[in-house]
Length: 129
Image 1 (cartoon, rainbow, N blue to C red):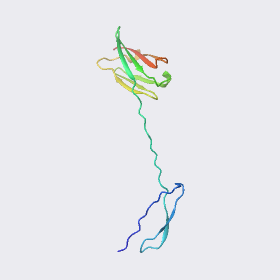
Image 2: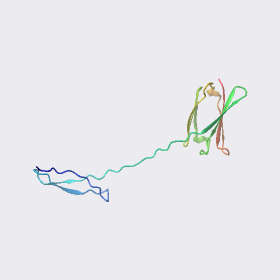
Image 3: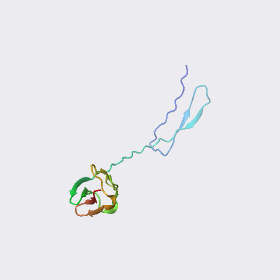
Image 4: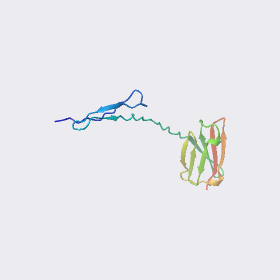
């Protein structure tokens, strides 16, 4: 019984070059084949964003205040905020947040934001609906 030749790729010390291998399969003409270059794999590490700490204060006059600790941001320009009556969404290079207001709704047109560079906080004040 004849053994069939197996194609084996070798890892070159220099991955930019290929090796030429002698192919000798019983019953076939002698020939050559060019081994493929080894495939390179790249690992990509996805870094997840932090969730900022949120402090909720219910104020007089039917208002709510949210203080978000964003110590890794340098300015408010880096922070995107989307507010609807039930949810606040925040996204920045370092943070991601989806905050549900819970048992109350807010007026999204009443949002007032203030960023403190000294405290590294973003303060939002909203009217309850």
